[in-house]
View 1 (cartoon, helix red, strand yellow):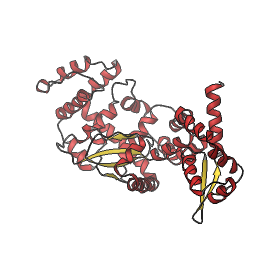
View 2: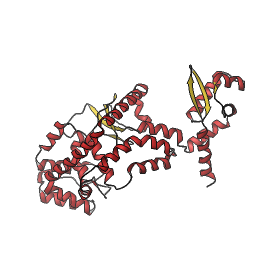
View 3: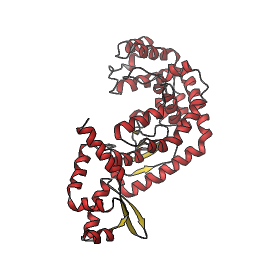
View 4: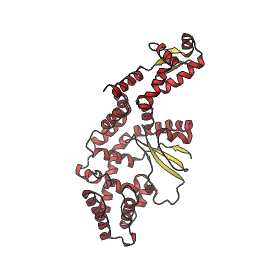
Length: 366
């Protein structure tokens, strides 16, 4: 399996992401940052820095969306966890393949053929769990009865029934909305492309380092031997997702599997490794502190920076022993280092010690 990262921006996906967040009527990135702070103990200033650029892009777009709110709510809001929004459903076959040829090919299908595909999507997606569709007897009465007999909420059923009679109008309106948002997004095209270019550069370096084991670093499970081509998600910067099966509806055989990984996924995993202290990490850290050599090393660099040779002389141990201990202490985030003329200058990471103390206090004293 070969992994390739691209710097191609899917503007349809980015526009959909903006709209989906916008209709929720909540401070999108503030909620994300607070959730990460609470769950993983990442300092808020680190998260502010991480999200500043894309927050500004999101604010620019959301502040300039000149589309009636009730129209956006109708198409893109949902209160039924078992069903996609009307907008997402209608864009589903073109959202992940945003080239003009694919969009044109889909739009040229007959209304009945489009409806069958939408129903096929709802039916075949196990999350929705609907009954098998009899496509040979497909007509308005069959469609309406089918939706009415589903487990969807009443409001969702109504939207899906209206879809049968208004499909082409809805499709045109939704595409117009998406394209209007894309126009606003492209005011920041240079910034967005720079972000995508950096993403490709950094993640390609990760591929060189880890090969096809890279995705394991992000708990991204992919059960395929096919090559994987990965594009960036910018607005939904925390997301990892395989390209859905229905996105390649017209292809019987796929040589490659598509995927999307958010631009912040790598950095967030790095920050989680530094700041998140779970029971396993607490135990590992306490074991390290219980080792006299490691404990003495940490004490020796409490208020100063020292090279490995200096630490070895001070503690009367070998440089090989220092190097071995430093590897473990660094993996536990207990030390930091600076390279200076091919030498490692070590220092105590006092923030990690404070986080350990706080974690122990939360566990046993509160």
